[in-house]
Image 1 (cartoon, rainbow, N blue to C red):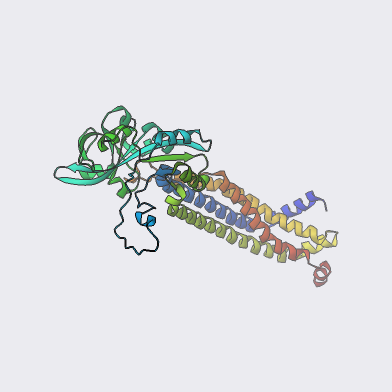
Image 2 (tube, rainbow, N blue to C red):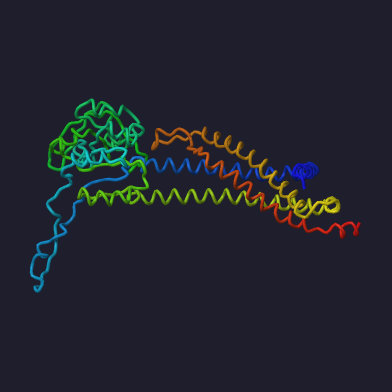
Length: 417
């Protein structure tokens, strides 16, 4: 049968029961709207939470972990003797990465590596009157840290570049600064593990969004941190590596472990719990959205069923005048897909507008000073998935009624009349 004629008939049937058609389309529209809004908000929330840690963490971290020597003197003794060993101490190798300049130069030449940043970690005491507060100072290459890990986004007060321009300066964790009642421009004293005391100028506050972390952590330049520890300017305890493709981090960490003979930890291993949480939230949002579409599909199924019972005469006449069962099936599937397409497109529009509305709702928290509104992700993938699910759901919702309509015997209907 000619396709335009099938489309015209489907259009006539739709308009003949326009109220039911509108109800079915509204059901699909509501389902798609909530699907888009939920996915946008949940993935925006995932991006925010992951960014607190994952975007601030090197994809691969090279370091030296303090641990007992793998070869003990007892291993060199005769095997026939019995030995009792206890209280084994770590080996004499400290946290410093040997030959770190050559390692950094080699990493920068690797085509898979986006950037490299050295780091010095110093365990210190913040001296507040007669009280000593435990803290950690991270010595960083300020410009490299900002370029690779968006350091300035977490500096809530002050200018991050002051760490480089002002000697003996420090950016304190906001929670640590509050404990010490320190303001920007104040001088604080810190004591290193070897007893050396240094006076540092506070040039900013840092907020990661994790309160417990901000109570102890602060940042200084590499040179300042090396001076606090009484080390030379070649002293490095960590090398952070950022890759173009984060999925390669586990395999490359094992590769670097063998090449550079240091400990290597990839971001997936270090932050597995955050990735798990993101996946769970995404699964929940997809499940809720698909459930809404399925519910809308049942509404379409019921409406098409009622339409078939009410249009038995029309279906019988169509088949009596030469329409085949397949033609009748195509008519009702066209009706279902039309409802799905119309409702789905409206749902995409309202979903986008609802997402914009959510994106404007104020979200102010002291832990995240850079976040002003609720996070929303506008990935086009969500809209493609939404309209695809809409068409698939409505197709299957219309297939059973269409199949039933195609099997109607016009002789039985006309004889009954």
